[in-house]
Length: 241
Image (cartoon, rainbow, N blue to C red; front, side):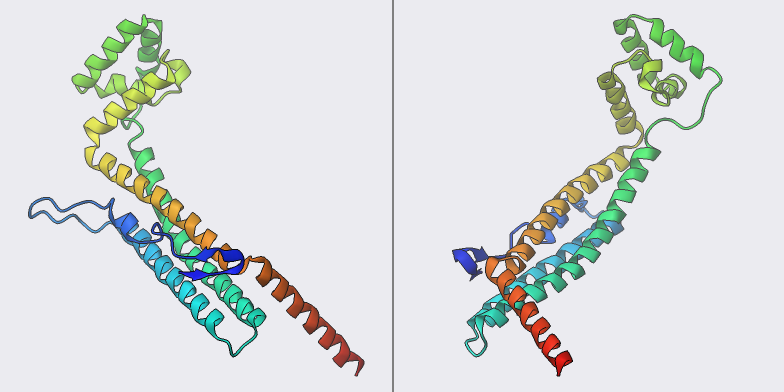
């Protein structure tokens, strides 16, 4: 932790830590060790890098601004420049890990969206269900799900909601029951990945905030502007000479 311009403090948020990702990983049950989850490992490694880089930035800030051998303006510029380079390194790693997780989440959701295959009876089944009273339709669908009748369930889940006569809530409730019944492992993994992804977003936001605090203070902006003005004047003078 360190004091920066205006009395604010530069510090590493607890959310910038790979443990916020590891907390949601699949746990060992008895002697059964879970298979390595590449998406979890990628996010965890990205957050580990973010934590290390964030702490290094704070340490640099402490050391540079405590060094009385150089002007304060030069020290602030040095920290601001380091902050920008740190942001580039971490962002590249974090974006890649987030993209990997997003791709897997989308694949799981697509693969469990509905039973595979299209039946020649799909249209007729949907028409019959749509003509039923809501209570009657709900019972037919519940019975089909209990009997593992994927022909009826599939006809409903593969179609746009308006073709089924069901409400959006009813349709999603059916999809949820279907997924839990036929893809329990995938659903547990999907939940874990979504929690990891949310934690990654929080950590990423905290990291961006830290970088801005290190590089976008009024003093840093003024020092950088003054340096640019000085370098431009010097370049112009050398051209004239």
